[in-house]
Image 1 (cartoon, rainbow, N blue to C red):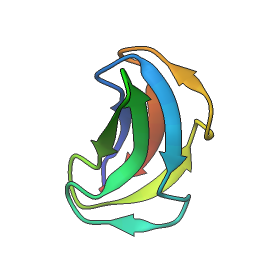
Image 2 (cartoon, rainbow, N blue to C red):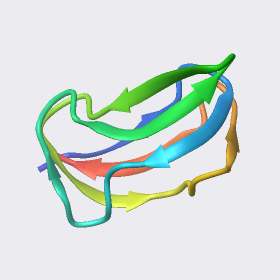
Image 3 (cartoon, rainbow, N blue to C red):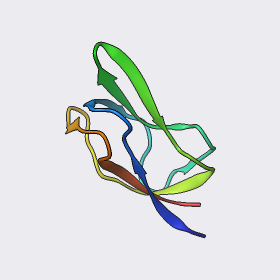
Image 4 (cartoon, one colour):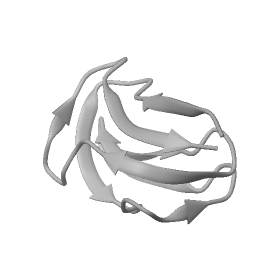
Length: 73
């Protein structure tokens, strides 16, 4: 299985972390939900995968391109 990273596509604040290390996700399942300009924007798994590590916590500020998780799948 290939390991890869998941990056944000926008700048915002981590509103909710929905995935945990070791969890299996289907393609498009949310890993985190960001809040930006009063909108909730999910950051989905790009493929069916297993979460290796989530690198952000609720309340963290992120910018476009930040790595938020490592996945395998």
